[in-house]
Length: 206
Length: 243
Image (cartoon, rainbow over all chains, first blue to last red; front, side):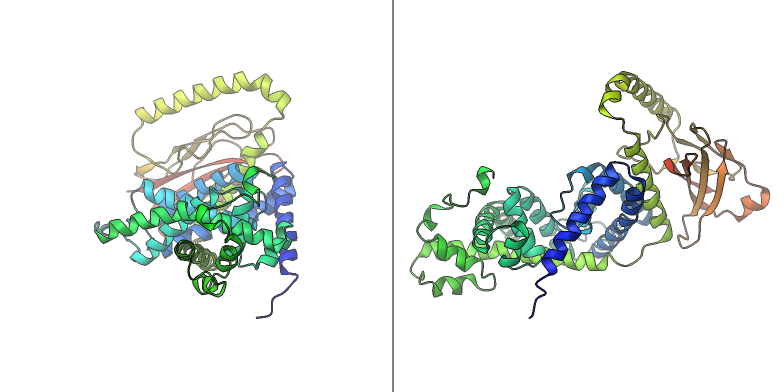
């Protein structure tokens, strides 16, 4: 498949523009605040879509409440946005983790390895959707524990589907250094992700 | 560069001496074991086991990436107008809160007064909540209610189940030239445009008999405080239903 060689550069420029927008919005530039508010329209869409994908465990008014809480939480978190991913991707990851946290707090998220039909009152997702979401949540948390440079390589490799040459270009590394960082990251993730996975498999087999 | 980013440190004991081959095998995500064999490491049991385990981890990464891309693609579908309106109001409210922050030099001067005021408001709010059970408040503790000007915006009535929506009343303080906007959403039909009353200079609105009849049975009402320039400076929401 032919790849667009300029795509990573365009992506880098877009991310830099996102960082600039966030910085100016936080500095209270009215035009930037307005543009950022527009960009935040994706938050309710993301939460609604993910909630639906999980079988709709949150009812409409609960989802609306979460949307508002998530937006306030996003605003507080914005100073930490560094443009390592597109703003919408960063928002998606944040919203996804907020949704999962809320579902756990409200005990609406059945364990994928326990009885998902335990509560007839609750609409629950098909086990595969819950399992996938729980896996993704675990992966997000595990990647967040890596050193920044390694986390960036893993995200660019698996979430943005870049080649090592493109990753090197974006992070200003040689492709071989990007590969070595990736290797080190995966070794660490073996402990962070692999151990819980093995525990889960053991529990599921009982 | 942090010590974590040191690209020359050894990684795993059994991998020492074979790191280049292991890296080469692993980065070929599609079939690392075959890549390892191609590198002539069939005889290294530790290497084989390590690459198999790491292959499982990379599969999980691949799956998480696929899940993220699929979920983000689904998130392009529009949501109900009510949900979108609430999101925009929350974003503007959050932005208004950010605008309230003071430069460091002034922060120190007013910090004591702000802390005292916040404590007083907290005590009054907690006391009021104990004395006033019922009411289906939309706000959560995480959602800030202190808005520009340091005054609390608070929805008073209607809340919870009521006989009729005779008066909409809230508490707050306007800056010079500011006003309130009242929006009333139909909780049972989010596709309906909200009823809107703008330019209110007092913290209440009394509908006429016709307006009252036209209001839906279950509502979510929202008050936005705007400054003289029309910029939002906080909002509050409350749910109510007519019995």
